Length: 310
Ligand code: PSU
Ligand code: MN
Image 1 (cartoon, helix red, strand yellow):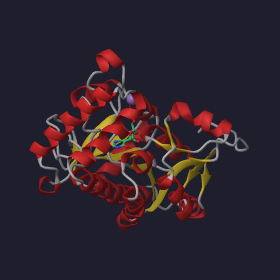
Image 2 (cartoon, rainbow, N blue to C red):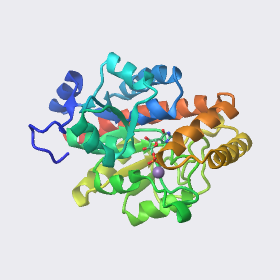
Image 3 (cartoon, rainbow, N blue to C red):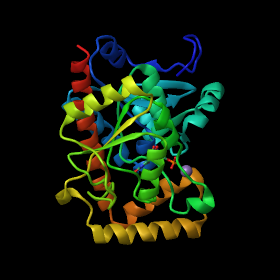
């Protein structure tokens, strides 16, 4: 964040994260919106620990990011993770919301856009999440397009994800990522993953074979231009949600959101909750699984990047 050191907007690093960054050791940023608004309580609390463990298994230190009482935190204590996972009123903070939360001393979970900004400000190069925000299916009428896309166009870091949220218009989102010059590579695939399912049906031009190649792509991007490298990591087909069930529950969830008149940033939490219920927990299990896989791969990429600069 382009803030003077004495401004409160400057993120506070946990001791472990600060030490790792000072020593040039690998760190992976994690967002808190997927915990607070994307997963149901109490399963989200367990997932928070499991995702941090997956980053460690990949060889890096986890740094979960949230704003607490106006202070952006990079790396949370167990008590702080409890707060993020337990509070049903916690705000959802994109980049536009950060200054208000900081100035007024509010708390909130950070989305991909604000997590990326705070991670990069802290000097973290790699970020793991589930699915990116993007272009919504009725965006021609609603103009609903996630701020994740523009944030990634100007923030230098690697984002490991399983594609974009399944309720979006995937081809339109890929077009916008191209317009915004965000680098997108598939991890061992040229099929863009479909979040709960391995293949969204959209193709990618590029793939990387391993974490070392992903790290080299980011090192080159950083030299050439600001902006993110998205590493799209599909679930293996034998771990994906049954595609028939997938199509059915998504159609039902979108219809329910329309009937309930849900709009804007409330759409994702509403739809995810509906999906978890309609699939009797199947989408939840797959959602957690893909986040864990992304966290571990992000740990490996961060470790490779740390090796490049030594
Ligand atoms: N994808 C998910 N679950 C989520 C999100 C994405 O499967 O909870 C969150 C991420 O934090 C992402 C945000 O940055 O939704 C995008 O929200 P919006 O579309 O309102 O910009
Ligand atoms: Mn939106």
